[in-house]
Image (cartoon, rainbow, N blue to C red; front, side, top):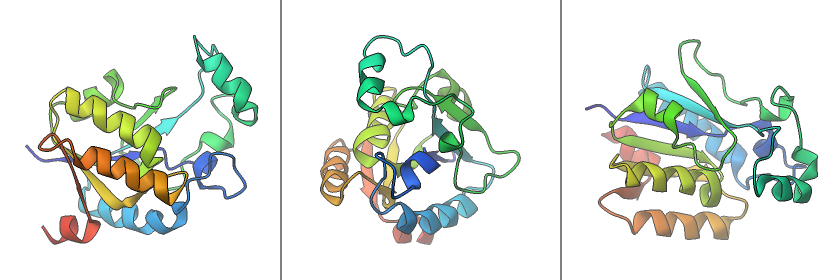
Length: 177
């Protein structure tokens, strides 16, 4: 079964250096992700973190803390910063983990190659869910960015410790395969 590339949350909210949710290294990973997407033509899915206006449960307190992001679903902060091919699926979720029925419906039980932001948040949450479901996951070290370099590295260490369900590789290795 051919793997799918899952590009997590490459959005203005995380790519703008003035944003409270800025992912350090966002600009550096963008061309790496674009190269990967070129390799996974027809097998790339993009995700977006989009606030649920109902703010169920603890999400109300979360958005009390991050009130600058109490934005409607159609706000430009949620727009993707990458050029998305017209036929590529885009999955919206109001949660850190994108491993939900919409993404599962796209990728099925295929192996996943995961990249995007933030390594210690949405990437980690998605990888854990997919691994729990039995989808083998490869996280691309140099195609992910976290809130800080330290958090990025810690999250990568966690995901790399979950082999064989999850592993971490560099983009050069993946593109050479």
